Amino acid sequence: MKPLSLARFLSTVVLFCGVFGSLPGATEPLQFALLAKRADDPFFIGVAEGCAEAARAQGDTCLLLGPSGSPHFRQQDEALEQALEQGFDGIALSVTHSKWLADHALKRLGKTLLITFDSDLEPGERHLRRGYVGLDNLAFGRHLAQLAQRFRPHGGKLCILGASPQNTNLQERLHGIRQQLGGVELSDDGKAERLNGANGWSELKRCPLYGSGDQQSALRQLTTLLNANQADTIISLGGWPVHEATEFRRQLGPLLAELDAKGVPPAIVIPTPRLDGAQRALLEEGLIQAYLSVESQEIGRRSYWMMKRLVQGLPVPEQILLDSHAHLPEALPHSGSEP
View 1 (cartoon, rainbow, N blue to C red):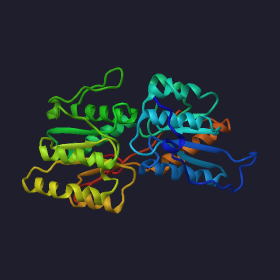
View 2: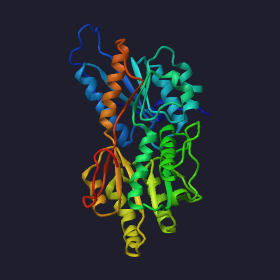
View 3: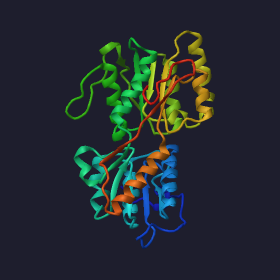
View 4: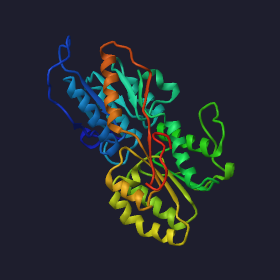
């Protein structure tokens, strides 16, 4: 592959770069980095805000690094190589393609402290990191499926929207969905087979649909899917379709209204890093049936905490797992953090 320039693929967002004192015994501020799948994604921006806030309180800095635009593991690999050359006190990595990163940039890890967040390394590569902060993605997938079951208790025709088959966290969510809907046990490698009638659930042959991990790609997929009118249940593995709620309404609102008038509206379930007023409006208008959210800023705060303690030589758990929260229309009952 042709060498790629820093300007093109390493987008650095300096969320906090001042120093407001230091902890007792600290000689100088520490500098940490979050290496995202893509630095311009709302989820990762939220994580970075939380990390920067926590770092600022302790006199340290936290920077958001990563490629911009449609994410790709080769771009992330190059961004990670460049980050490793900068001498950070610690790096938190959201993994795109575990084996590729392990075979390339992470071979240059050396003594750099590494944790993962949001998306972990595969089990065979986890010796490279010191800990993980984020969701239990398998359980998160099951929760997405439980929300779908509220609307399709007897099963349905399912299509799952993804970004890349290499993303470890999204694949875990996929297998969690299949496990919950099909009532099947996972194989030894943590995978579940496609749904083909188990518990009344079947997946469309062309699904899962993988896109570019951005809103326009997801909306194009949804438009094609809804026009075909073959899936009555759609679960997205990420929040891309609703990054801008007004754009979702503009492109899909008339089509969804037409399906509703015919009595065949799909059940659409989507994760979101934090539910805003515009996204809630989609829920109350029936354009989205359910959201499953997680506080992205808290992932950032916990990532900073883990890296800071590791630098100080203090013990940390191998994993810090956060809860998710179901959001349903006001007319439907809620059940706290469990769908």
